[in-house]
Length: 302
Length: 290
Image (cartoon, rainbow over all chains, first blue to last red):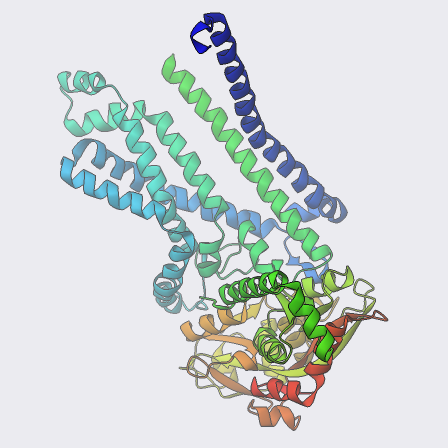
């Protein structure tokens, strides 16, 4: 019977499959959207009331975090989070871009391949391992510095920053390298033809042209750094005070796992409040970067 | 760094398997067991404090040896959750390493103490300070004493290590040495104190840091890693805890709903913990029986 099947029938069958698959993909897509929507709603519902109760201003700009005594100021944590992330990006950016330039333009192929494999390995190491290395090697090293300056020896902002630098370097390097490689060779050829040196062509032509890609690397790196908790807990000292470079700090992220286990009542609500604050902060950073990125892209196109 | 949680997860996992095995065993077995000897069976859901982990897993193990058909489930998630989940009925028995709050949020529970735990003051192996008074200790933790030379040690700034807010050890410690008094900000723990989020983390931090001081459950002290400091001239030991000369100590509690009826298996477990067998196990864990 199948021999007499008409072309139309087959086509109908096909379009049925098409429609089903379309629906299936739509559902898959919706799952992601629904997850984000529900998470947002949940964070607001769980974290909102305590912020309303304490007062937005007292919560966000309060200087004292003492939840068992009804003091819920998270300002030191916000500043520490910004300091640690900002510091890490500031250190990682020049290093990362220079490594990317080396890999994309200067390194012999075999060395570049080996380096790239090692950097990928760096990206795959779980954060708790970085934390462990930081706690065993880096923090005791900084103890010496603290002792020399007659400061109490403890986990500190510098250690947290350096750990974050190592964690975000692979992202910045690989995204920047891709961006630099994507710059049309003609740009550089033109620069060389006009008499620039190899390095001048890289720094005056290739890097500016790869700007938007490098910014994307910064965005991804910032995202990873600001959300990191595990490695930071192990090296930061976790005191909820205004940050100093060699003093202990507590970030927004680390507060939650540190205090979760024994918290109850308003204390636990306040941890949800911190979660909401972190959520809003990351959303804000993403939006700002996205806007800048779009502007940068438009500039390049124009 | 902290081996307690993975161990806890492993134990919970084993317990899950045990529950599964118990459920999937042929129904005939259970019936036969029940008929012949009136043996207890079933699962008792418990959970809470992580500080009681060592003694509680030992108690549960021994109890289950004697009652093969009973499974005592123990979720380790902190005293706060232990209290909350006992109130809302998720746990039949809760574990707490701190007293119940009296502010109305933790009403309706009965806390039965079953062990006394010493809180040890620990310093780095290199530290020569061997004794601290209550005043010195509260001075160090509130920040009025900030150099080891002020308490007879070398000239170096003190690194204060404390547990996180809400920890049972922290609240018991604060209560005894008279710091963190409600509405008295001058008794608050020095804000720059390093916060470690578990007993193991405190021990590691003190072991690594020559200028650190910390406090942790006596049952968890490893004298190969840290030195214990005498409190008010008394060195911590099971003897000084027993004869009540060492004053830094707290109780471990089993929580049950006030007026609520326990399952036969749950009741048997409570009775076992308070029996002389159970109390012997408590003593084996460097704790003081009630």
